[in-house]
Amino acid sequence: MDGIPITLSPYDPQWAVLFEQERISLEAALARWLAGPVEHIGSTSVPGLAAKPIIDMMAPVRSLSEAAAAIDVVTTLGYRNGVHRPEEAHYFFKPATDNWWERIYHLHLTEPTSLLWRRRVAFRDALRCRADYRSRYEQLKRDLANTHGADLMAYARNKDDFVNEVLGVRDRTQAPTVSYPRRP
Image 1 (cartoon, rainbow, N blue to C red):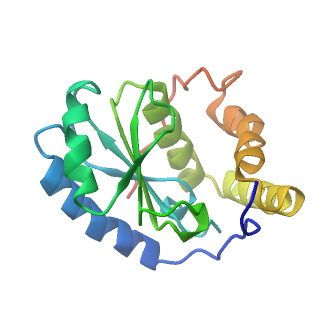
Image 2 (tube, rainbow, N blue to C red; image 1 turned 30 degrees about the horizontal axis):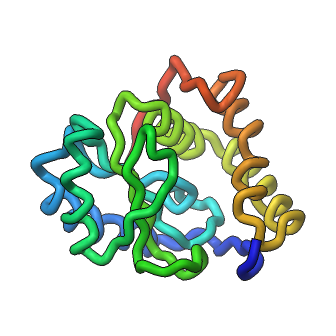
């Protein structure tokens, strides 16, 4: 894959500030479709964890089909509509660039009952609760970044076994039955 090598930045408390500012804007614009608050997910949502500096977010919508009407609303906020798991989410990124490393925000509109929602929130919560998971995950991400260079798909795909272990499931088609206590 073309691009720059994957690099991780040390945890930055500013990521939480950027999320909060964007959350307020998104919740106001998406209010009629939302089933709950926009969530900060991914590594930038886990204090102390190094990450690619992209703020990943999920917005829980009451109906994925009805939320298709929100696509135009989100694009007026500077996002570009992309394709990522279209069967369970509407996906966006900002700024609207073809280069993933120039993006600051990723947003998924998905139903809170979706596999995507349940896995991402449970994984984030597990990392927030367990220092051993954070440490192992950060080392895995560093190893994968070194191994895969600029191949973002290989980097992401090779995290699956660890994610499944943390979630206590066999594969990526399953979500955990136990949820971790939620913390901001």
